[in-house]
Image 1: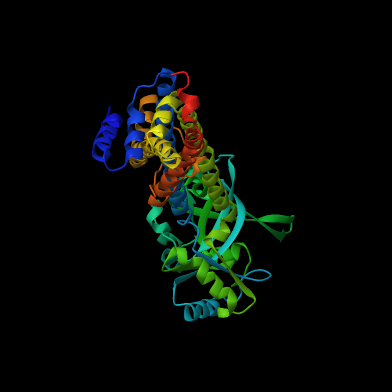
Image 2 (image 1 turned 60 degrees about the vertical axis):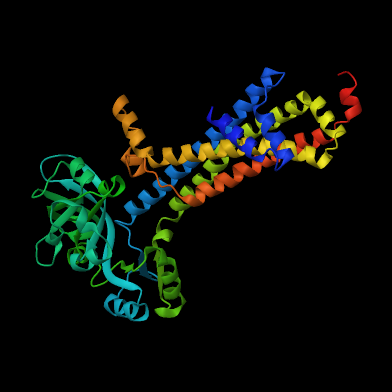
Length: 434
């Protein structure tokens, strides 16, 4: 009813202003001799609305995933890292000074020692877990990454110098090992120690002094210790694995990287930004969003083909009307305009309704999915796979505009052939048997 009311008001206002537009609006509402034509027209209208709404909603959800996953990653991955060619960064204090002096947009520098090992609990459990060890200095690390905000038990400051051999574990890792703050764990590192009994792996006992929770991938595999303890355990001397840098604007990291690599620091150092560290992952997200756009665009395309079919049938149904209009002096160009108006208006109204529905669904997508999950008792997403366990949504107006323009363009294309065929109707042939 809303659709026809809009058509009625528009037709009334434009009746004497544009004859092709008036006739096009009248044909939309007029009863067809063949009821099947009305059904096809309704299906095409609903298909365009549904396709536009679904496309906007899915793209908003993809945007939400992109934003949330980036924010999760940036809790543990610094904006920039500086490495030394051929191995560890040996003279990192002077390198830190050079970076801060040459690049004002760098706001903080933090050294880090990174390596792998095996971790086991001392409580009699036989569980052993692979772990990515990060040797940090809390007073510097907290200026680069907000890890202190995600400590759920204990304190990050327990990793300060002269606090003993302490370790901060991810929450999933702690659960897997069955340990809590105050318990002892044993770290086995891939370094060989010579003893009277022969060569054995290096083993060091640590006390669990904190537990953090960021996302499953980090909570299950990461642990942090004091940087000097890491240098002793992994036998790196005073060297570090890399320097972590923070910048004023996270999205300026690639520009800062280029500046550092182009001569701001000595050539035997090189810099990588956070997009380089996770390039394949972000490329996959971008490709997935693009593919989803084209796949869901097929819904609109099918609806547009239905629109084309309905217009072709309308032309056949209205051959006598077209012939009469031609004999009354209407030109072929005006006949073309009539059917372009008819199809384009159907596409326009379908697109507008689809956009409004898509915006509504995108705005409340998280709440809708949560309601369905509570109703069914099923969790749709696992944090162990997707980093998050809920459906995020981020509506971007650029996506809305893109979908709207594509839908309108396809609707316009669908009108061209029926309009052209209508202009070719010969009055004598069409009225011969009337």
